[in-house]
Length: 117
Image (tube, rainbow, N blue to C red):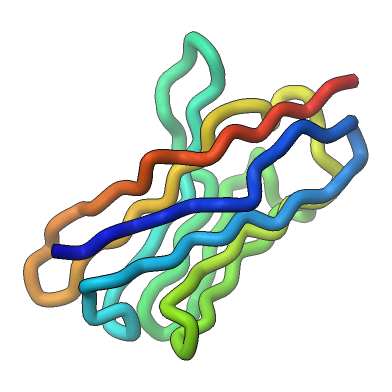
């Protein structure tokens, strides 16, 4: 079974940066696609960024220019670098992996990000 674990969340002030980490075990990581999602209080979970097997990344317009995603296959990890954080970036951030060969989605338990103005 694939296991996904996020870390790196915290409480920061507007304008600060955070780097979220996601480590995946039990999966063919190098062939798997990954996504970062977030869920703000009282809102639906939304996609933030994706990183596919060849390393191509895509971030949503709402965070473009501030957030970047990258993967490190040697560490079975994917990162979300978040700069110039805003209060509206507050929420629980989740990492999801699409397990290569099965198409199964596996989610982490999330890491909390709180941005104060």
